[in-house]
Length: 266
Image 1 (cartoon, helix red, strand yellow):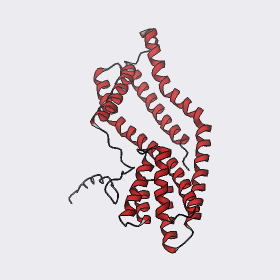
Image 2 (image 1 turned 90 degrees about the horizontal axis):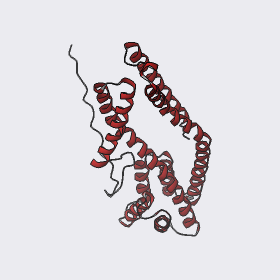
Image 3 (image 1 turned 180 degrees about the vertical axis):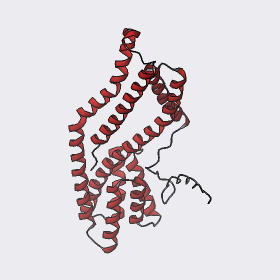
Image 4 (image 1 turned 45 degrees about the vertical axis):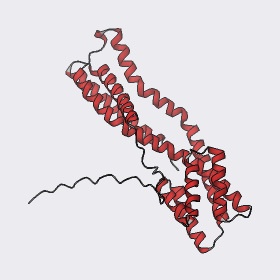
């Protein structure tokens, strides 16, 4: 009997779109300077916290390196999520403009040209939605079907709302349905979803602040105790290190669970 190890599949290359000039919103590449910066932030934070609790340079160095490797991945995930949320808000404005253009009698290619110009005015030429509309208008000029371009945008965005809109638009456009009503309905659904999400974020904002405060309280508490005198707390003994490790583990688990509870997605 022989054991075989499965090789880890290499990461998929970023999707560059039909024209090769688009972004994959599931990917957030870092420049070397950004990678060094985020590694340094994780390294310093992990090293300082571990030294406050354990007062061991070797252990602190190990924890610092581990945190320096973990933090860039966590930061990349945060940046991807933030970019997607911003893109959804921009896409809502895009649908509003598209609905207005279609309602004024423009056909679909003309409507997308008007939307591309409108997005530049609203969000600037460097915004994600402006670049996506420019890609769609360029693709239409190259005789690529608009529903194919929208489908590619929806796939790269990683947002179910955009992907669902592209799928419905494709069916409606090919079958000769009322495209304007589809755009208007999707716009209203996204507006309602965004409004509810904003209300939820407002309702839990104070809880998130409390959670962030609780994140630093144990570190501050231990630091102050040590500053008051070494007799008040002893974390160098075996019992002290075990109790500290167990307490930190419970605290980290509680923080992750609380963060997951406060994350409410629609």
